[in-house]
Length: 463
Ligand code: NDP
Image (tube, rainbow, N blue to C red):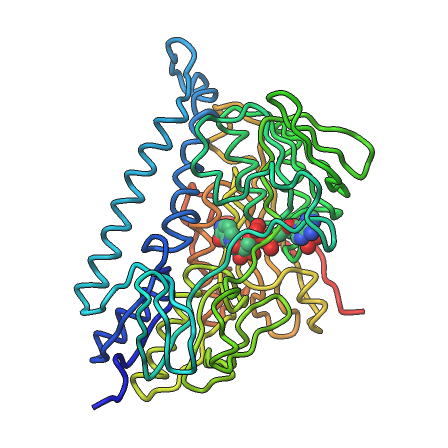
């Protein structure tokens, strides 16, 4: 019999925390979970799911425009109602939140709607209830939140006039002119969402091209596509000051210009939710960005305390948090030490069209010592021939020249994420380019291009 109230206490009811709590409870542990806001965490409440619903909403505008090429007449001018989208989205999110709660409770987990902070290495204080609970093992799964620190070290003057990806889901009105700061997933996704919904969008990014770390050819294809669609892409640019003048916001940039707009979305990264958690009372070490430092089994510097998901600042992706949670339960409750696998994780930026990738970019492959063969293809998707839209799909395969193993698959085009998910299976199994080549094409699809790219574009060696 444990001398603690619980075998496991999970702090945070997001994707990682919920999965860990459920699986540990189903394995026979006595489990409690504290969530101070809403069950479901970033992914369900203010991330992946509501974002994807908004992406779908934003893509209707192009479909309406392209429909006449296929013989359709759209009577009148289609119009979009932001409050309807937001209300319907909120309803769906509330439904999912309910399901999350129900599933956790059905597994026998006790849920505290409260904020839990450390009192000592086995004791947590529930702040609202002012109640102390103890647990044999503790899992920190508190996630992260959008940062507001711009420039190099400071919050820019007027930065509090800007919104982040927390507030963007709850705006009362749709802004007509939107300025998006950043060049990561969130900045690019919302730039496309607002553009598709009819706003004028400017993207302000400090670097040379957005999506640092992605394959350079894909980054170029994305920037070209954004400019062709009419988004203003301002590279090498940062805000220095934001002011409210009348109903408008004015953003001054380091280039000397002033941009007038209705909303400014800061999407300049996220910071781990560890402040005020008092992890120091439990001997848990934090890293430079405030992330919980963990070993390869997600164990913190306190051996009975683990951490999974965004709070560890490894790969900030929902399925990765879930995978880490499953490995944690194997390790801590099933006597089966299991390391999460952070290789071959596919990801997608839900722009229009999507940019999706699994494996290494050309630059990463060369940087890690591979001699490579590169296969590239750019084509006009069949859908857009009659629709008349001048868009291109770009695909790229990076192949190890010595072993013929496919190191990376990159797609910028419609349904890229759906295609890359399956390419990830092939890469996970160690597929070679020859395996792709001897797979019969499925016609007519965009994905067939991956098995018909026979002509090498070029070869390169490191250095
Ligand atoms: P990212 O870390 O992806 O991007 C942050 C961006 O902000 C970068 O372009 C960065 O520039 C820029 N930036 C950082 N600091 C500053 C600064 N001080 N001033 C100006 N610009 C700055 O963050 P996101 O917030 O977009 O997303 C966080 C994470 O969430 C992602 O990494 C991803 O893992 C996950 N996510 C995944 C999604 C998906 O799977 N579709 C969707 C949304 C989020 P630079 O490159 O120069 O450093």
